[in-house]
Image 1 (tube, rainbow, N blue to C red):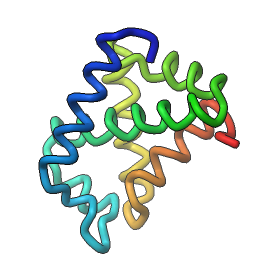
Image 2 (cartoon, helix red, strand yellow; image 1 turned 45 degrees about the vertical axis):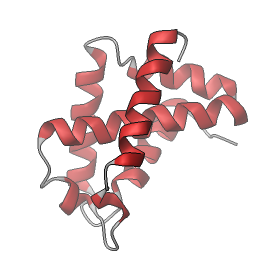
Image 3 (tube, helix red, strand yellow; image 1 turned 180 degrees about the vertical axis):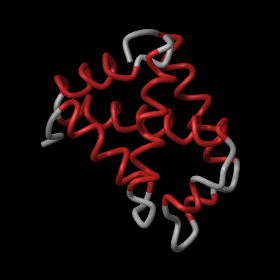
Length: 114
């Protein structure tokens, strides 16, 4: 996240996630539940998850954070392609938590966070 606008957007999304009750916090949340959401809800969840992973990576392995930033690019059409790729993965692993699937996709694309 190299721009003030991206950070501002991440802060707004994080604030909305804190204020709005999340179904993802419920027991048994899986890819099956996630796929029942609207595309806009799914996109928001995916973007927020990837943004937070990038923030964590800035503290643990900055090269991974840079890779995530280049891989996702929320300010471009790349975001839509990546959201669709993540959706396909989540449908392939419907019994897993969507965050775990997103994390696996990020590790495959950008390497270990350690």
